[in-house]
Image (cartoon, rainbow, N blue to C red; front, side, top):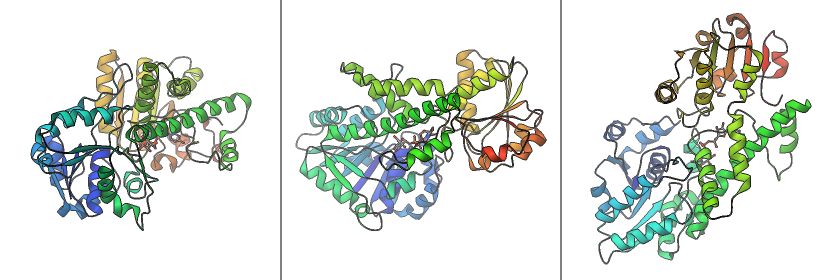
Length: 442
Ligand code: UGA
């Protein structure tokens, strides 16, 4: 079976490499020449633990190319894993998906299953199938299957091999048979991943309903954490107590400064937008989005409350990525907080073990767009970043930050004021120091 994967971002590349690992010959296609050149040399264009090793281990079954038409023409199965970024109104931008679909329709020379892995609004798979049927060479059979992705960045490899489930939505038995064949190795030991077939709209809906439920869980616990601060409860004890109930579960109950990344913000807004379009607004999702917007700047507000003016204040920002284990900066709360700090006249000293280069790119554009001037410097170590600062803000729970010797806050900072947006340290340990410490819900 010849498999092609269009798009070599987190979803596309991980899918392609995983399919090669379970025995398929896979061609990974991307329009970005420099990414393809890197991958040909065995270098992953994204930071994802274990990915580069898998690329090397399976290099005999992996081909990388920008020549998409040649790749598509004789493919049995084509996975589309390109981005569906959010438009200004919150809806999903399907331009990249349709550009691939159009190239497929012009190239196909044999029957093929086109698999949509990108997260797309309900009904898109049906529209794509109609487009393909109307536009491929006469006599060819082309099926469309919805196969949403559930991997999380930082654990993408494990999430793919030991997925909680494989969801395949098709309206056609033949397409389902082919998809079962593609995934057969993953449904057997040692992986034993459950394979669920359903119609395309339900498969599309599983993806949105899952991501939005998880985002809602995070927004819920963040609001409860804020309330704990008001009433004098400790969110860690509260979530511990809640998590013992198997109906609730203990996962995704970690409070913080809001969810970020390329998925939750986009998928909550896209489903909310669609619900409004269909005149059945999803009010829980609306609330989830609003709570997250407020939560993202909670830490900045705590800092602002404590200092009369932030002008000239030296503030270290520890952690820039939206979560640990990734270099992804999309919708990271650090961006909003750093912009507010700079706008208030503070000097920012930033540290992140992986994400500095990506952060610099994002913040440069934002500073220009928003007309903000300000002083931001980057450091390779936490020690250097916090030296002589008036305050520290923790944005990401990187192990380097969680395991940092807290005594150094006292030793190196001008005044040891620590604002921890990820509850990295035990209150008991902090109480043994002179650190003035504010965290979330405790
Ligand atoms: C998310 C989903 O978890 C994946 O299942 C899904 O496949 C993926 O989106 C996608 O649609 O592609 P990801 O965005 O990589 O994965 O990140 P998560 O680990 O889910 O975290 C999202 C955000 O929620 C992060 O900012 C994280 O800090 C925050 N979070 C998560 C919390 O604040 N508390 C928690 O308890 C869990």
